[in-house]
Image (cartoon, rainbow, N blue to C red; front, side, top):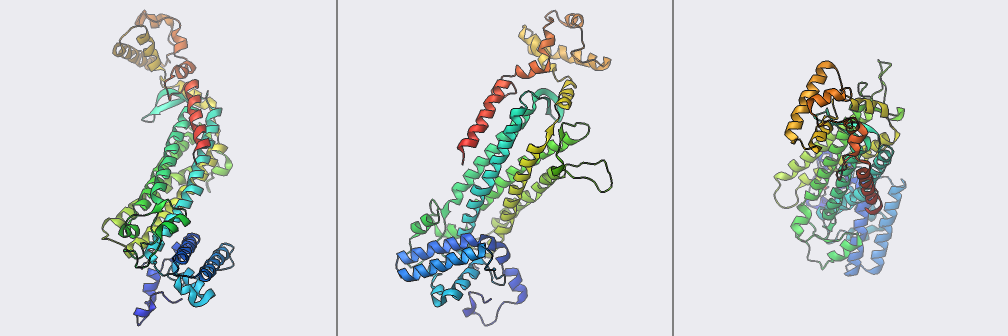
Length: 461
Ligand code: ARG
């Protein structure tokens, strides 16, 4: 296929240069947005009477046909074209003759590609990423509701720290995911301005109506400086950062799952559909899907650095370097969408092993804080109580006892503040339910957290 800029040149591009320069294999993903942008542009040209009514209708109809034919696979994209903008324009001209050549009046591929990318990413965020976050939040909420009373050890430094519940632990991920959702909404604010009409960089001598095209394409308003319109990519970097933070969260979640799936923990049994076997060890059931999400965070972080590095030394305004923005952002977007979908399934199809979680919580003097809080409640200064229970734990370790095994007589020897209600105080259920701090693991606090998640699911779009 001929290039659009043939006139100025005597020779065509060397094949090697053409292969290196062409971007259609990647930017053809945006064919639908490219055509929507062209339709808006053609209507605007009609409005300012650069095109007649009849010409506008012909162009718009032909563009609509091209779009639906690509969608239903009756028109194959010609991958010898330089990019999707070139392909659409040449296909249009093939269909309606010289009239097709009028479409590019008062436009450049610089503003066109910036516009297409914003439209494409807006669609991906609102129609795929944000809904996929909601499905995951919904699945986590469902599992949390079933496990309000499921006691498990809470960890700091991956050491058993204090008792909590599975619901509490899982809802922490919902808190992260809700912030992620909001981060994507913030990205949408920046994606919502239309670069179209900036042309190559300084606008045009034609009396175009940028407000019209902006509205026509569903943007909030046009960008306010034409140089910035074609040269800014911070909105792409912002989106790639939001993808990085999201997959960092998923990766942490997966790390928990991998640990819980270890035989020595056995907190979780993954469904067969979301785990794999080994080719040599017949007993193996591996958490590969969770590991892969954890692993894929690497490529998403890499894409983020890629984009920052791509942009950091560029002078104003458009530079061809910027064509390299699409591959990393497309990859990050697809990776997070797929990871969210898999994660949602892992969570909803797994079995959580209540017994194992409870037994594990019984180890490690997880109720030592409650034991010292008991003394504090009876008037002992916290530091003294902490020290006294510390030495009691040390004795128990030596004698292979738990705090529940210590007799009331022994407790009384340590402090006469101890009464027989100490056993109730250090019972794990009491430990959890007494933590009625806002955001904590008590039943009441968890029900509030679940309400917050449900409100998010109902209200946010
Ligand atoms: N394929 C290009 C891109 O994605 C389109 C803009 C080309 N502009 C140019 N002056 N060569 O950035």
